[in-house]
Length: 221
Image 1 (cartoon, rainbow, N blue to C red):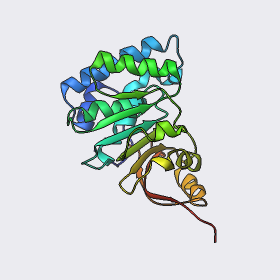
Image 2: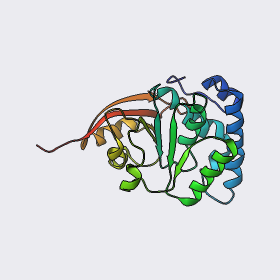
Image 3: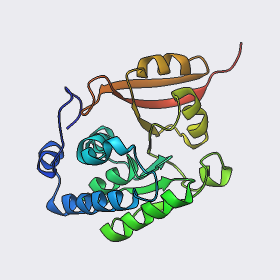
């Protein structure tokens, strides 16, 4: 399911209907929700106001990226993963296909520990990299990347600067953006050349998913 008007996806049943996932995936997400609420008591993982709306604000918001990704994607890297949105949710959905390696890059060691615990308790195979994305060693770790994802990490021009070294001709960046998505694209186009598509968010009426391809820095003259 991709595109269309925003809707409420606030229960496991609604999530299963929207994304066509298995009972095993729903069980993993339920475990994820429990761990998120437990760890939130000591670590600020998400905005407290969203904690009772996890399925809609975090799980569905993240999962909408999976149908927009190339069907043959093999390497997926989520940058600034935080509490795992969108990357860890996407990894749980992709686990049903069993063909995509997902890495979560999160420099905050406490949040990385949370991600490790969720992965362990749910049995999802993800690579967790507790390092800054700006480090060359981090950027060189993954080889040819098919999908880059991020949510609320930085304005688009700054975000493209961060991930540009990881782009290849086959890379698609899937970025969850708010109501100013088009303005961010126009600002980023001052320094960068790229192809893009904007898809309406499933979960927020004014939000968009930006798909960025063929990224190149503009040269003067």
